[in-house]
Each structure stands twice: as structure tokens, then as C-alpha cells.
Length: 174
Image 1 (spheres, one colour):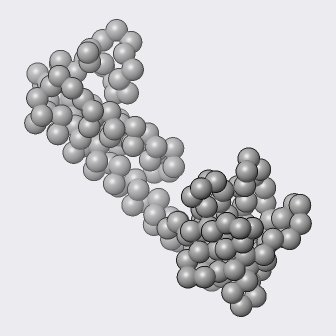
Image 2 (cartoon, rainbow, N blue to C red):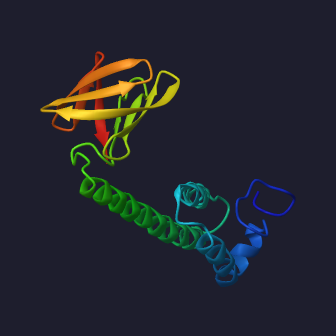
């Protein structure tokens, strides 16, 4: 049931029956809230929550639900696009400063363990492995990527868009 009484609805006024009766007024309220979301990771996560909520609305006409979904999708896509452009700009700056174009600005994720390597700039890598999160430095020698981590050196081989080492394969995530 989508009406007042402290429901878990993520949008203001918590009265979806009213939303169905006055779609234009509600879309204005929803649009203002979505427009106020920051164009950062937390804004994207909130937009994803709002979009999932809108897609799962029940008990109202499909055309009304789709109006809310369209509004949420538009803002979600705008925030995602702004974040992508910001990441690409940071990547260009890091490459211009001497960063390796095959690594800098990318995360490599090992799908079975959830471990990851995030190459932030020309020499900083963030390691997330088996519950450990730490920082290290890296350098590239031909196809080898040598990481100086808090507990010693790690050597990975870069093959296409995969880092192979420690018996694991880390796939590049764009």
C-alpha cells in the first residue's frame, strides 16, 4: 500500500493514491527531488534506488507507473553520464601525468572472490583483497605489473584486459 503512515516510500508526501489522481503535480515533486540529487556516486546510488522503487510500484495504472519510471531513468542516466565524464577526465589527466593508459583509471575485479585492484593514477593502486583494503604503488615492465603492497611485492601479467597472478584472473571493469 503506497500511502501515508511512515511507509518505506523513498519519495516525498508518501501518498501514491494522490500521485495517481494528480500525476502532473506529483511528477513535479518527484522531478524536483531527483534534480536535487548530487552528480556523484551517492547521487547515483539514490537515483538507482528511486528507479527500482518506481519500476516495482504496484496498485497504480501502468501509464502512471511508467511516467515515474521515465522521470527516474532520465535523472539516473544524467548522473551516470556526468560521473563517466568525470572519470574519463581524471583518467586523461593521469595519463598526461605519465600514467599507464592500460591501467590508470581502471579497476580490475576477480569475479570469484570479489577482490579488486584500482589503479588511481600514475603510481597509486588500491588493493581490496580478502577483506584487506590497502594502498600500494605499481610500475609496469613489458607485460608485468609489479605492485609494492603493504605486505610485499605482487607481480601480475597483463594479458589483453586481464591481470593474471596469485592464481587469480582480474578482469578490467570499465
